[in-house]
Length: 201
Image (spheres, rainbow, N blue to C red):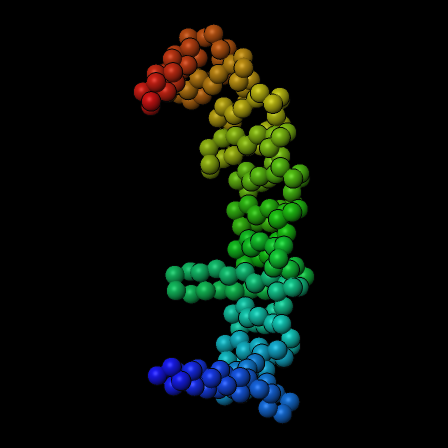
């Protein structure tokens, strides 16, 4: 029983190694079929049944590219996938902004637009970009405004800013208004926040 099992194991190993032995100048282990044409995967690639010569290539839809020097970006719309290659930017360091690749070290993607970062601490503000250490992005989603931050203590109040240590953003039915911290509106807001925190325990 054991000898038959051992013999079968040896034959299996022998069979695997013989399949991968070089046959002439080609190695059968690295050969694939591309729409009826056999090719060496170390020397070419097959993208959607079309053969393209070249080493270390990948497919981006029907287009060949080298991941070391280019990036493939893809977008899916229902059952359709669209792909596009951006040359000159390795996939190791890139990100995609829809179908366009960019370098996230010095660029940012804001609402499908690639913009140069003004600083390492940059973030999107609608279609624009701002420095979170020096600026504020204030206002509703549909109408954002970038403001120069007056101090580290300043935060947004609708499309304006206020000093959070000395003022508050008082929301009323007709909109927002900046008032001193000792105003009745600010004090009411503080009491409401205090009660809401106590109720959450």
